[in-house]
Amino acid sequence: MSRLANIEVAGFYVCPSSVIDIILTHIIAPHDGRILDPCAGEGAALVTFAEKLGLDLFGVELHEGRAKAAREVVNQLTASQATADEHTIRILHDSYLNLITSQGGYNLLYCNPPYDHDDEDGRLEYQWLVHTRPWLQPGGLLVWVVPQHMLRFRKATRYLLSWYDQVQIYRFPDETYERFKQIVLFGVLRPKATAPDGEMVEQVAQLAAGKEMLLPLTAVSEPTYTLPPLIVKHSAFKFRSQFVDPADALAEARQLGASTKTAWQEHLDLNGANVPLRPLTPLKIGHMNSVIAAGHLNNQVLAEG
Image 1 (tube, rainbow, N blue to C red):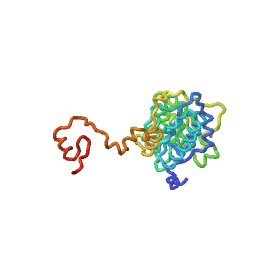
Image 2: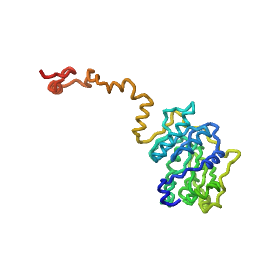
Image 3: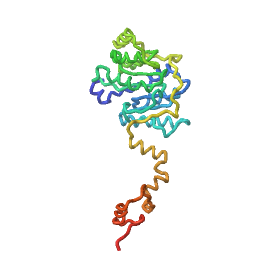
């Protein structure tokens, strides 16, 4: 794709559904769990992972139109699930950098970040890796979908190899590789980072050389990765933006009935002007003189004449 076309789509490339289906054959979730997609797009991949693996789903999308589309497909899925809380916010229209969520709150992190070809040293991809890693619990699985040339950026690969174990890297299948030239990287998060092997970092960097350097992603008969039980339980889990979207606040107020409760309605009741008021502290003589001069006495307005 040309640079101008890339800018037009804001670096957004949908992972083909056929590739998602193959990725799913590598994963099993016997304990259910949670998935986070910090660049959810229109939500297709997120919903597919959640539905097939039985996961609670959460996503973030910066583009307004795509965030709206993601909310719609997510709402369709949760509406069909008897155990889903319809009031839970699952898609944020925001940057993932503004996300406030539980550390170690997810056992699956799916990351298909936007690609900026003006960023030729891999800084953006490295930022995604560093910022999202704390949200994945130890033993949780990272699925990273990026262009193959990103493997040559040693700062990112060094970080991956220090924090992730059981790393496997595949290129897209032949029918989709030529268009996207993307790879899928699997990795299991370690409890803490280890010093990466320099030779291994160089070997991974060599995998960026071209199509023939990587095996294509294929379906497997037995899953390779098993998602662990969640360590952050539902009662302790949080997912919100550091900024409040007025539309979200209004929708939540309506859903929870805050705007229909008696206490709120009384604030809007014109008759409330006649409700006696008790000052927090006794009025001083000067205060009382001001009240009387203004025509108020014992909460009554004194009319002229």
